[in-house]
Structure formats: C-alpha cells, structure tokens
Length: 143
Image (cartoon, rainbow, N blue to C red; front, side, top):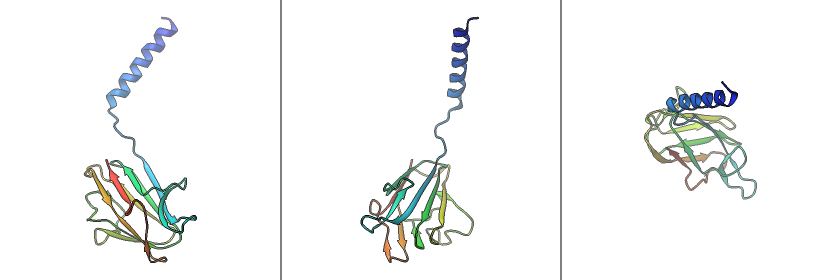
C-alpha cells in the first residue's frame, strides 16, 4: 500500500471512532474574581484577564470558582441550589446563601441533571456594605 492510502484509512478510522464517542461538551472550570474595579471603585465579577464577567455561561458538570478579593462576601441564590450544584459538605446550610471569607473561593459544580436556567444571584460585600454589580444583578446561565 502506498503512504497516502494508509494515511487516508487511518484518518477515516480516527474520525469514525471520535464521532461514535458522542462527546457533547468538555467539562470546563470557570474561574472568576469578585473585586473592586480600580477605575470606578465599583465591586464587580471579573475573569482572570480583568474583564467584567457579570454573566457566567456554564454547562452541566462545569466547575465554577468565585474568589473573593479584599472582603468577606455573602453569596445568595434566588432558590435552594441543591438541584443545580454540588458543593462541599457544610456549605449552604439554609440552601441558598453562603458566607465566604476574604481571599477565599466558593466552589460549585453544576449537576449533570441541572435544569437549563438563568439564575440571578447576589453578592454582598461585607467590608464595603454594598452589593456587587454585574449585569445588575450578576447572572449564571446553565445550558
């Protein structure tokens, strides 16, 4: 056999195997920080490049990490989150809100069977006695 035929058959075999796996979504880790904006002193959700990230778009099984910068913060979701996320034992004792120490992370994983939804959540910045501005309020979209 010539080399072109071998390469072609190998590519067809690989493409067929990959297509049969049915991979719909690679699991992502979404990292955001909540910090005071240096330009206007407003507390915002930002990505690691410093861009505003008031709306987070996620998929099932994604891991989401919010890091609090410079203040203790309280995260509150509009309803109980057990149907949407998994999290460390001992968190979200009331089912909707969690206090996070300054410069620590809140880590949530979107459940495999989480409903598609848009969750508006609030983040209260304790030291500044104010709420974080995102897309007023910040949003988390689960696809």
